[in-house]
Length: 288
Image (tube, rainbow, N blue to C red; front, side, top):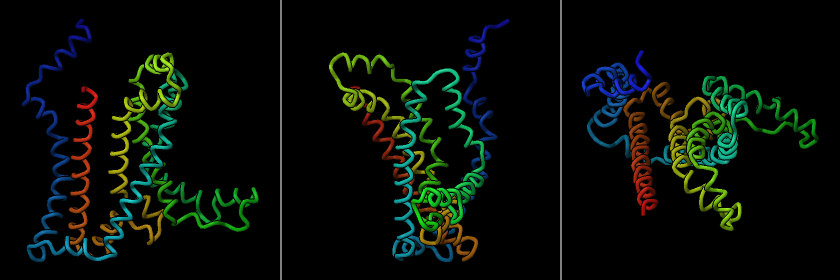
């Protein structure tokens, strides 16, 4: 019987043509489901009803659409910051846990990914509504005399989105922290470094790739989030994904919706390029 290592070696002998053939179903799905509709939408934004950039000029010139874009960026940044604050302690505890404790923490992080976003969003609606659990407890504790308006506010949108996207922040940070040997911290403390100094000079720089990856992932996902802002937020919390849906379903203005998608896509690509350059620069500085 062949040993497992021989199977691994055999798996590395696939030719480029065979590898491409194995990946063909996935690539075909990406082309049909994502690239082709996106290209069609962008084409309509540039050539219908006449060739030009009039739809892009409208999106960037009219204050109402500009406010929606800026609000989207602001909410995405707030969600990213809140997710980072919540994810770091959890990832740190996970990186220092073993056995059953690690399994329970990992299950707590991964199980929400197997639950529908719609279900988790409705759970927040139950918690934050006028007669919901949060308002009931606030009144029982005597902190408020009447129910507060928690639902359909920007803080509610930020909190719910941060909860939904939290696993995408925890996992990269946990992976980075798990790769840091505990001896590094002990060595820093033996050399006279305080706990804060060892964190600032040792732990944080080594965990920075995981932090930046998690922040980028959460920020990009938050930019295009639709379900949670549409249900938790009101008209004053409309984000760009909701605006695109409104233009397509209610206004039937596919060309303008394509322009909004094109602007969002350009910003995402620019942010990705900046992130890749920053990561390369960080590696270069680390090697120097």
